[in-house]
Image 1: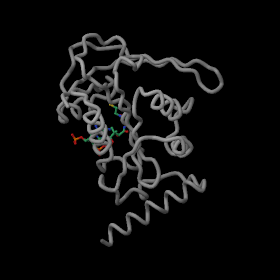
Image 2 (image 1 turned 60 degrees about the vertical axis):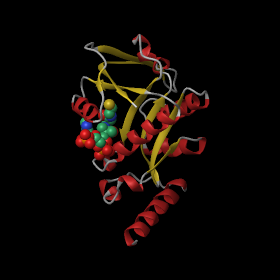
Image 3 (image 1 turned 45 degrees about the vertical axis):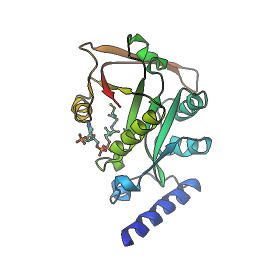
Image 4 (image 1 turned 60 degrees about the horizontal axis):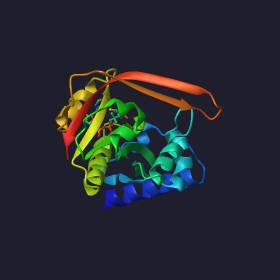
Length: 204
Ligand SMILES: CC(C)(COP(=O)(O)OP(=O)(O)OC[C@H]1O[C@@H](n2cnc3c(N)ncnc32)[C@H](O)[C@@H]1OP(=O)(O)O)[C@@H](O)C(=O)NCCC(=O)NCCS
């Protein structure tokens, strides 16, 4: 009971502070006591964008507002983990080939969806927040009637392969794919980014 009250008070305090504009950097101490049950996962909405841009900034542009737009257009759901402030996210994409780099994938079985860009704030890592987000993503896809989910692992992040396999994923095929994105930043400069990836798939 004492721990519950303590956690609730902290969450409210962070939230109030953030919403009043006190964007203090988050340090590991702030999340010392966090457990997955303390974390709330919900769909992004317009009011969240400012907080997301402050706490989980993207380098060249607001990917958060782009994703809100894609959610509004019915292409995906952008799920955010909250502990008073936003501390992580995952993207549930309904049709994998809507995501530009995945257009190269052919013959995906019907009912396949895609979980993309799992991320947790460095100060909140190692406490089960990613697992909480991943579970919420799976749950949402099941509710929407999907029967399989695709995941991407960059060759530069080999530890994530084991993490996917422990979660029940298997390698989609033996290919190494080029994952390329092109985007225009707020100053109109075009950026290209590419990396090599493997695709993993799992039944839901
Ligand atoms: C990978 C990441 C999301 C993990 O977040 P987290 O909240 O610390 O993870 P959790 O505590 O919930 O652990 C979940 C699983 O991830 C694994 N994991 C944690 N950090 C990891 C890392 N840096 N690389 C690979 N796997 C990692 C854990 O071992 C655990 O797997 P297990 O249950 O099979 O042991 C986080 O480190 C991050 O945001 N990294 C940068 C972005 C990234 O690499 N995203 C993955 C894209 S595929």
